[in-house]
Length: 259
Length: 259
Image 1: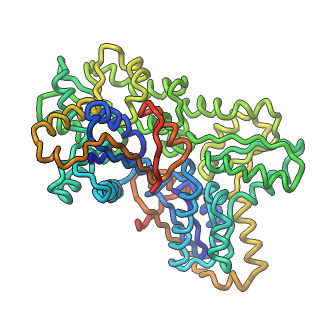
Image 2: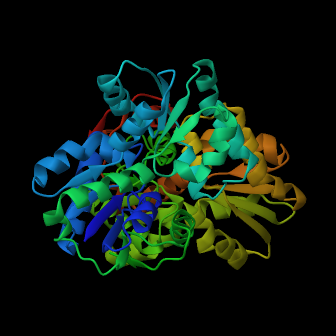
Image 3: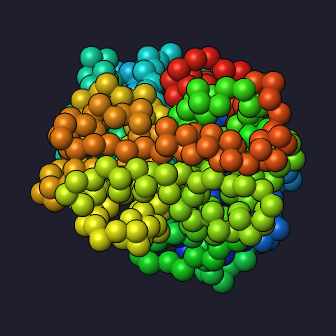
């Protein structure tokens, strides 16, 4: 079973890609909606929650873990690896970094994410470790509540996007990393603001592709994962609002179990 | 010791009034910043958190509890009373309801709050039980994140306030209940939008006055509370952002303990 977890239901944009690219594998998703959002919380809180989330999935039978949350990937990946040295764990940052580096022509890259992700400096560090690039990062903490309110088509979102993203125009970036799993849901608004020349990169597609290759190269791991095409979705708090965002993120209705 | 709790640091607007009106009493505050916000969460989650928050304060020695959170007051007050039948527990809804009813001339009252508070219908119920009034309620879920981002002077707040509050103009209300402890921090913006004729009511002042009278009338309770003028502030997750909102809400720097 492939286990995917997120601070809430934004990570379903990652689950959707896994279901598309790895439809044969069993999948279990956990969204910590009772404590969402993680993005404004402290490193200690994020690590504690991440370990509990992973424990839940391991107990459910997950043999491979996907951290479908940039904030957790930024702050808790090392701790997760340490706790589960024998479980393959995939995070969402490296695939986005690689895709951005492969795509940029002028070596000028923008990054947007939650406050915790941006303050961690992880994107900037990984990008610069790999290549001599210019990086401009910006926290956009109001995007998540706006998306969760479903204000996706509202002019207010565009106005706030302008405040957050205008600075990127001065920096002549050609690539923007969407460093939060919610952001693909407002791709159009972001594109309008940063200009159509700028290529947007999110982790979901690249990550699912990476896992597919990994499982082909590691049949002993692939053999441990169930292959009945079954998928289960758990949240720690089930509300109408979370069901509504989930349906939008996944593009279909799903049945959640509350734990 | 008087115990005050909230889903986060917004309840410090209530603590501030208690410190002003009841300076001689010892006070202990708890803000559940690790799980904030409560306002979009389910009834079950809110009740569970409220009981844990109250337990913490009781263990710290609180002999009187103040629920400085509208969402908890709306959804968990009865459960708290049942669990602690011998502890006086004050919530923030009744004082605001009474003040609104005492002040309204045309018997047309507006209410704003979190989604959970507004959906509970508690303000409407309490107002109508007491008097034959017209009530118009509106959830304003983005106000809390905007305030927590300190976008208090930003034009974006005004634009969002316009969307939330315009409908009140058509209803000819003369009183608006600020049904969330964060909202007094953006009183000016709300006033601009609903018009200066409309009187705004928040619980903090009325509640502290009510407790003062209660303690004068119940010296056996007052005698159980420490009177060294000491105050302690606890949060479940301490971040720079929460410290910053806290200082603004309380109008002075405070030292938090993390638990």
